Length: 459
Image 1 (cartoon, rainbow, N blue to C red):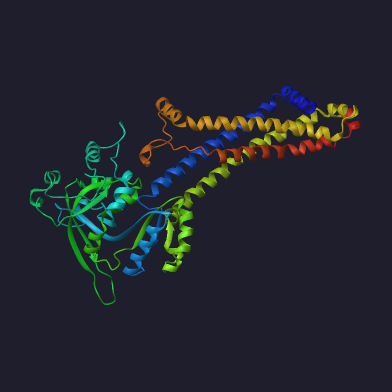
Image 2 (image 1 turned 180 degrees about the vertical axis):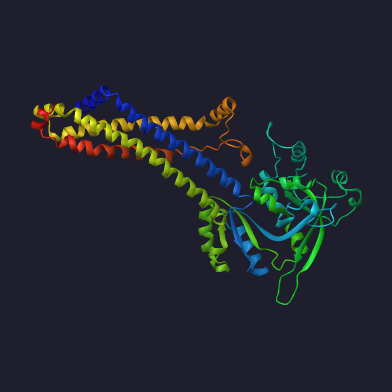
């Protein structure tokens, strides 16, 4: 307690120590804000890049129909599997009924290529409700009025049956062209919301789709098949690249249209609990069914390159910002070094009065610990407060100065994402305290080794 009191008096007597404390505070505030923003970006990216990917995917294109049927039955009986639905996919090209070519010169540069993703009605209705929900365009956003109107009226008619289409129903009879009101050969299709807006594919629009049917074999040519589809709505998965390159159709209709050799290419699983744990368990249980371990993947496994890039960026930013903390705590070393020089006679007096030599070292170690601890705590709480109010502050700066730090038009989210992870921030705070304490060891060791006689003679 006496050492603590002396250390406090030393610190109060030298206001320069406040500079060291503020340096630690500013450094930790910076790393807290940067880490929270990077964690927010990572969380948004994880939500965005997932698209319509299921929790776990089992690739089964190497199995025959009987094996796939048995595997589906086994998966649906698994207590850890909520749902198991087959999927298929085929590459295709699309054009509106009013155009004469798939790659028209008047619209060159727009993508006419699309991957048709064959899904079951139950999977789309139960697991993709968020993707089928209407897109709400915030007021004041830079969206063309025609696009805004399209987004407000391009929803599916029945969320419980997204592929519902009945040309005899008044709902569709009013939307179909006159020459298509009695056609029962139209296949329902769902385009990505912004892709449909780009091509003006309103619900009820007839779209011609072409694909290469069959399986490529040596010496044979694939046949080109064309079929008319009817747009029954749109979806938005938050992954713009997925939405712009995929369209959803009933799986059985896709198998018939593209003459797929493998009517089921993968099985989409919705699992209870963590997907990674379910993947590891299924790799063991499905080994006897002839499914190789590599064929069972979580959605993170399939997008590991992109997720790894975002994680790597966060690590690099955190390491770079932690060097700011190291530089800040180094100023504490300089301050304590000068304090030892100025308090040399005081150290000699303490030792002459009977205090052990190590007490002098502990005294200055305690000074450094107090400064670092105070700066770290202020930096932690200040950083959390700044991260919490970051978006209002950025809006205020933009209104006052016109400077825009975050361009909302470049991302799918309209405010700077911030996610405060207290466990990580506490780790950085402890690391800052440890770093600051390490920088005080040398001045404390120098004070502990002072000769009391020489200290008393010091001027």
